[in-house]
Length: 99
Image (cartoon, one colour):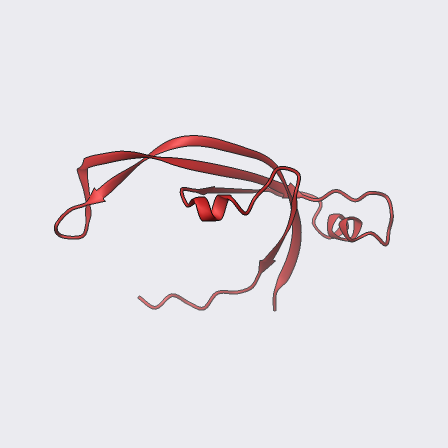
């Protein structure tokens, strides 16, 4: 079973983060830091507009509060989000991690 929600991008922040080059063993070498840009996308559930048949009203009645904060250093990911745009979020159970 899955659940679908509808969220609005209300803020995008830019910041610098530190990443580390991998050493010869393939693990991060904390002596080799370098800066990367990170974008943090803030989203909230859509508001109803008073029309009981409008999709946003139906989503608002089902999930009237909440928020999502997504930080990424991947430009391909952050370019998918634009201020004021709405996005569907689909939640479905993930399989148990095999470890």
